[in-house]
Length: 494
Image (tube, rainbow, N blue to C red; front, side, top):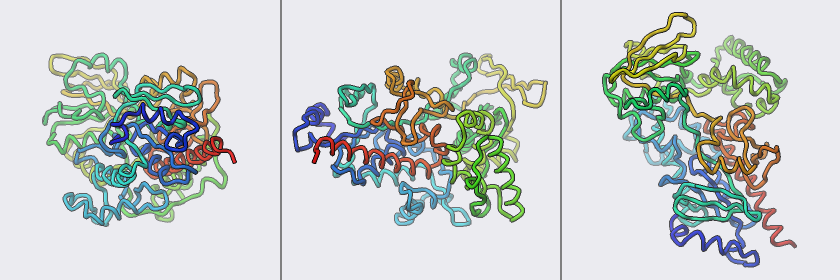
């Protein structure tokens, strides 16, 4: 946290606790827990917002730089952004800022594969982290935002404020807390994890540094999952020179789709007569795709329109229908909505064409270790006869276990136990209001505790893609700014 943290948070807390002081003691304090894209976005927009009085903005993030998180901290050259650079930005009203930033610095000169024949840019993901960090840098230098490079260990409500402890021994009192933590890690099926835990090439969490380095060039690999993470894993293995056979299995065998050959216009209007059930929404999307195809517009334009109207569509659905949609339709939405970069798609196509990649619909019925091998029994979805596979490595890519978010960090579990947090009923994250205020088990919202980013998508719907995450960060920053103005008015009544 640069000089601020070095001087000791306790000293700052002591100053803040003096309500009559007109110096820094009178500044409201905002703590943002998590400094990935969502947390950094809230800090960036809040520092630029009209708060009535300049607040102390403290971002708790163990990484060296703000704005990277899991997605943009990767140094793997196979990891690329999944949408064109021209559609990525920290500014909701300036989608082209990232591409302009790239062009101004010739930032892909050492990455010739980034620029596609049609001119679109799909650079490595780390470059977007560089861009976000560059926007935060002046705010960190002038003290508008303060980076506490530590992990939060405890958050407790005390005398109308939040007491936040970290693993460096620091303590901070804050008026408002925004939870912007990362996705929870994937959860391997319990029996699978228990039986394979002792195997050196069982990779249960690909987000850990160097997780794939245990896999050898000729290893036979079973990948559990077929989404974006699976695609990243297969591309990363190919980049490392892996040439062994890969079997990717998921319940439906749905592979993430690629982008349209040429940009497609948005097509359809799903809000004029908003669906109130998952079935009717699915029927409307299918009908729009049929009409679009007749006009030589691909399904991409329809799905992009659903995404653009996603928040209102989601909120028009009763909770029971949201659950039904998540249970039955989410896998189909995910593979059409979250598209892979052309470079990654080319790797998968080449592997399938060479017979090195097999994609199966089914489940893992049984596994056991036999010497150095992993013996897998796979149950195809539409066949009675199981398949036997002898594997050298198993990689779990089932995606974030959002329903287990409260168990991922002790301070989250403690906040839930003390009545401040609860799971969203759809199982997609943490419960919050349409103002992003956290909802406890009693159903009561806390206006001083907010949820930012994908953990709020149970309320806001489409909150996984970067444009929606940055829009939500801007929204949360605006909500906090309004609350800060009220705080200052209460401390200085006219």
